[in-house]
Every structure is written in structure tokens, then in C-alpha cells.
Length: 232
Image 1 (cartoon, helix red, strand yellow):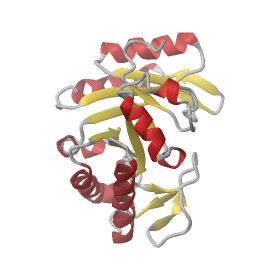
Image 2 (image 1 turned 180 degrees about the vertical axis):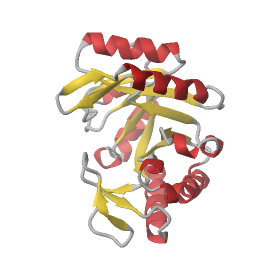
Image 3 (image 1 turned 135 degrees about the horizontal axis):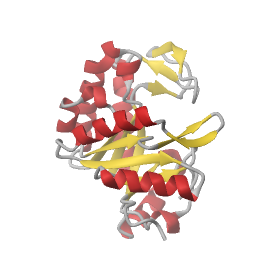
């Protein structure tokens, strides 16, 4: 049984349709699912959502890529406003919608921490994706530096690593000062007319229960997985 508050699932593997269709919405990697499999999920009442990275590129070298790379995942940071990157991402969004995804998950939105000059370009990219995807569901991962404008374009906001996170030594709750800071952000999110979700990382029942309980206190529907999002 999935916890009653899990209104969304995240799974970056392949298959597992029986497990996936227990969720109202699931975020998937588009290359792992055929149009037929997506139809199976839709017919079961599950809305499959395709993944999009908006500021990092895992692909081969391209003119929009910066020299710097994400130290955790290896992807190249990009110049978000580069016309080639905009065309690439919007093309991905179109392809995912055409293949049968009912919504889009917008990831890597925290450019205010790395390249704040790209914030206007990122907001423009989200608006361009909205034009292609409407009225389909759009979920933003964090992107707090884009608020309040971002709330005009998305249907939901995910607070990744709200209470618990992965570290080099396993999984743990955030220290008290970070928990308090995250709580302040969560309270601010309540002012926007969007769905609110949390994604936390844990490997024990105790840490999982803590994440679900704390998310519920702030009106967030919580999903808990491992770092690779391989559990469903």
C-alpha cells in the first residue's frame, strides 16, 4: 500500500506499470516508455508526466553548453537563453506530449544559485513550454527564484528535498536551521494557486515517516524514494 498522501510518484526506471498506475500522476523518463505503455497508464487513470531539464544538458557537446558541469550528475550547464537550447527544449516538450504524456515535469530551475542572469531567460522558456503544453499539467521543481511569475505558468510546485536528503554517507534529515528555512519557503508557497508536493530521500522507515509527517504539516503531498528514484 502506498501512503495515503502520495498524490504523485517519481520513477526513473523502466516498466513497473502495475506499480505506477496506483498513483494519480507519475513523473517518468520519456525514453523508457513507449506510446503503448503510456496509454496503458492513462487508461488506468494515471497521468504520466515527461521529464524536462531546463538548465542542464546531458547530451553531446552543443553550442549552448557552458564549460561548467553539475558535479553530482555530470550534465553541462547551459546558456538558457541560447536560441538553439530553447528550440531543443521546446522540441522535447512537443515530442513528449505527442507520444502520450499528459503533463511535463520541469527540472533544474535553480539558476539563481549559479547563473542569476539567466532567470529572465528561464522564465521565458517556461512560458514557451506552457504555450505548447496547455492545457496539460506542468509541475516545476523548486524554482523559487522565479516566483511569483512562475506560478502564472505552472499547475504545481515540487519542493525537492524538503525534509530529508541524500548525502555522501547515506540519507538523513536536514539540520534544524535548514528545516526552518524550508518551512518558511513552504509557508510562502501556500499563497499561490498551485498544487504543492514534496520529494524526499530516505532509506529507513523512521526517516520516511518523518518526511511524510512533516510535509503534511505544511500542506505538501509527499513522495519518498532513493537518490536514483528507482523505487516505486
